[in-house]
Amino acid sequence: MPSPPDPIFDDDRDLLPQRPRRTDHAIGVIGAGFIVDDVQLVAYREAGLHVKAIASRTPDRARATAEAHDIPTVHETISDLLADPSLAIIDVAVPPHAQGDIIREALEHDHVRGILAQKPLSTGYADAVAVVRACAEAGVPLAVNQNMRFDHSMRALKALLSRGDLGESVLATIEMRAVPHWQDYLEGYERLTLLNMSIHHLDVFRYLFGDPERVFASVRTDPRTTFAHRDGIVLSILEYEGGLRATAWDDVWVGPDALADRGDAIRWRVEGTEGIACGTIGWPAFPERVPSTIDLTSRRYGDGWHRPRWPYAWFPDAFAGPMLSLMRAIEEGGPVPDVDGRDNLGTMALVEACYRSLEGHRAVWIEDVIGG
Image (cartoon, rainbow, N blue to C red):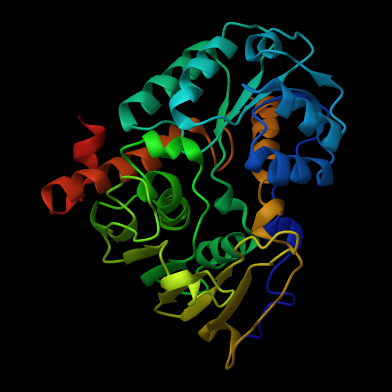
């Protein structure tokens, strides 16, 4: 039996995003909330990226964020930032219902060479299609910040699957038990967990295994969330043509007063005909970094389990990946690796199919969503 590769994983090849030749593109950031202030700007600084300007709907907050992260320019309005000819990339970090109009306004400026949007790209599939079409017609690459694709445990798992080290995938599971701090703007949305949290897991299933044929989703409300909602706790099952079943349990309740929180909020497992991989995705515990993990065993490696460990963490390290990929698309003239807006329509269609499943208490074919 062959010996295991030594090492099984190579950081640059298997775990980390490929860097473009140039990383000095001037970035203008729109938004100054938690993801920008505590996560993205930290990741960008550590990756050596150049954020030149920031604007927010609340200028005072933009000024505070700029001071904390040494951003040289604060624009008083979003339109002022979009009109700044020195900016090559626009990073849009606002609620999903507001992203489309900002992206369309950005496309009016010839100096804009790339746009990064947050996930979800929009509140619904049809709106997401319109945004992607507008960027395609303008010839401006659009990236979507589906950052879990850049978590190093997911990159390592993708490498195993691509090499065939686990054989044919049989069953994949993600179990999340964590209490997110929902953003205030979500109180006005009809959609909650599927659109804003489950989307991470639905997207990473697509990254690992491709598009499923159909999906079934079941939900109940979350006793802790006080504002009106339907999809609090979410169970979803993805069915693939070859027989693979992938399921996500998204529990944002976890028990009274979060008594069940053991520090392993997201656990995942993939069982294949030749091996098994399982691990955790590190839930943020600021100011502490929580690295994700992977354990694996494969007939190709002989007996026993392998448990490599790295210092990388989902928050903040994975958040540099989408921006680096956008810079590669600008450099190479092709789609954005891993997080292209056109590919993200598959994730938005999967989310839409889940909501249709709730409405009809039935499995929904993804093709039915894409076809209308």
